[in-house]
Image 1 (cartoon, protein in one colour):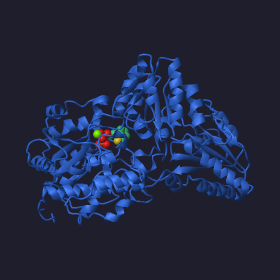
Image 2 (tube, chains in turn yellow, orange):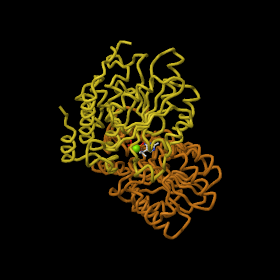
Image 3 (spheres, chains in turn cyan, red):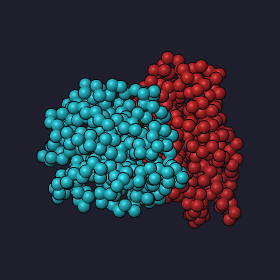
Image 4 (cartoon, chains in turn red, purple):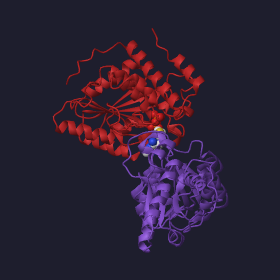
Length: 281
Length: 310
Ligand SMILES: Cc1ncc(C[n+]2csc(CCOP(=O)(O)OP(=O)(O)O)c2C)c(N)n1
Ligand SMILES: [Mg+2]
């Protein structure tokens, strides 16, 4: 493992990084005129904590390192925030971000394995990432590796039966090198999760399946970092972090307005959004 | 196509209380009217396509006519075995509506490209497979097939503006529609890429090359007689589809030609390489796979030249 042990930046600096990632994501989506702002913004703290908060052990200069931690964005439509994190980490040039969804771009609308370094699974058809994560975690154990696998799911995504097949398997395999994070932003494509197909009580469900469950405010950077390190340290069972988030977080007119689930901001909206996401000094 | 289709479905639902509509979290901006008018006959099962198919199977066994609606990949591939063991095996009136056939979700990437949906369903005897070429034909197709006994797959596009010249919304189960005649070459086309094929034929006409264009929307049942009649007139046939060349209309035409000992050469235009790279818009991907009007025009021109030199 070549990556140096990261010195964890302050919460304030991580919050600024999250703002940077949010600005990137919105610029990319606006430029592409398509994409999913809502679910990109709600994952910003989770992704920031993983990549910049000293959680994920990875080396952008050596993306194939067999000892690297794995990160899988199972809710693949949120990929702009992941591309932003990968670019800011140095996996590819930040300028390339603006090629999202463009002709011949490596940055496709949903993550495609083998396009840009740092993408660990092709997702976009919801419900498949946790199973793939289990595969990585089992492989790591068989190979005697120490790496940890993190999978981010959407709450709507958790309606897929496959998620619960995986949820059943991970504790049975005693995979304590696997962490699932549910970006629980309370909305899916057609509206509120609660109205369409409630997941409640989701904490009890994962617990009943044998997971160590943590519940946090998914925008409280300190809490996100703490929960992720706790998950990593927990032994004997996988951890599921239920991160309570706000869809569209950080942009007043996007917050909880599900119109921005899958609609790009226009030029004026982008300007307003960027001003609301300016770095705080 | 999808808006027209759902509007027509609402009219049918008004007349027949057995008609139901299910979606797996893909109703936004498309299904509201139906859901509002028939709240007790509309179900959003959440992001759960397999459950949707299972529920529809039970409803159909109980006398309802459930339509299930999602993006074409998620409506067909995810619940494929459910479709096979329920509606097909037991000949139940489940209607699978897949939106965005081919590359209509272009920039979303390969997980959203439906280029084998027709193939995997067509190979099962016992399911009607319909791929309309434009929204008018989609409406006619629905109006003439919604009450069939067995299952139906409707592969829809998103366009509500482009019409295939000469088609006039015609659809008939087990029939194909000749929308343009000519003697140089026959183009057989499936799905919402049809306007590109007709445009290619029109551009060739300017150069004095007259191509016939046959639209195959009734994929299963196969329009056997129409195909035999048209294939017999030509030495070369060009098939066009936003689908893998194996399994779709290219295969279908080759099967009919072989089964009936017809002497024509079949030049299949469609997707021939694995999905993945490159990415881009629908227009870009169609062109990349040789399915834009320009690429089709040149493929047709080449086929005509080769035919002349045989
Ligand atoms: C198998 C599958 N079915 C349907 C879709 C279409 N789709 C894309 S996003 C989405 C809603 C997801 O909601 P959630 O997981 O809560 O994501 P978030 O709110 O974080 O955007 C749906 C249904 C898909 N991508 N994959
Ligand atoms: Mg959600």
